[in-house]
Image 1 (tube, rainbow, N blue to C red):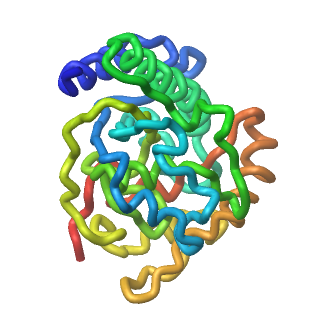
Image 2 (spheres, rainbow, N blue to C red):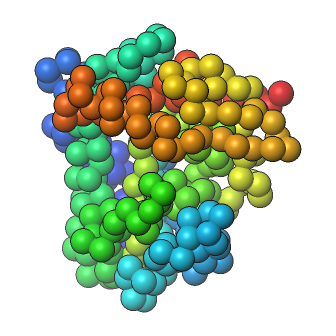
Length: 265
């Protein structure tokens, strides 16, 4: 299987799927211009995810999900300008963002399934998406046995920020997906070594957070996002207002890393 063909077909799927729109809000496209990268399923960084200071022993390796795993395909789908711009104002999250977050993840699930079926249909190998697997679960401390952001980091898509978003060449405002396959695919070279190389520690995400869940814009002492405070806000404030939708995204919009890697200061 040629990775160029997969990239082209993902682009076509994004452009043509009715799930990548919200007719009610006249959102023509929730996501645009995807990025795609490949990690070696045997990359030692996956094993490192089992460290309790990162994720924990409950993290399942690619081989655990799919015996014979050789590659992990990771992608980033940026929110469109329409979705991002609506959420730049202060205050309660924009309806466009909340719909983009909820309906957008429904599209993301369909995209994961599309890639899995695409690979399986070739007859060249097997594929599986952990987020669609019945074994996927949130274990403890808002931590799960697979992480789309960490898979994206390992695959070379970007590095973390104070808000724990991943900053890619197209910013942090978007969603991630990953597919594990037995195909041997060309690995994407990581252009970074550290966890926070794309973050300039400007602290703008701290100012944007409505519940002050982000702290310490210091390179030598990174506290980052308090996931419990963030989750409580989403569950207790956003969900009742937009039920069944939730999410905030203020730390991902109107910040230097919204749609690009920011200048390092």
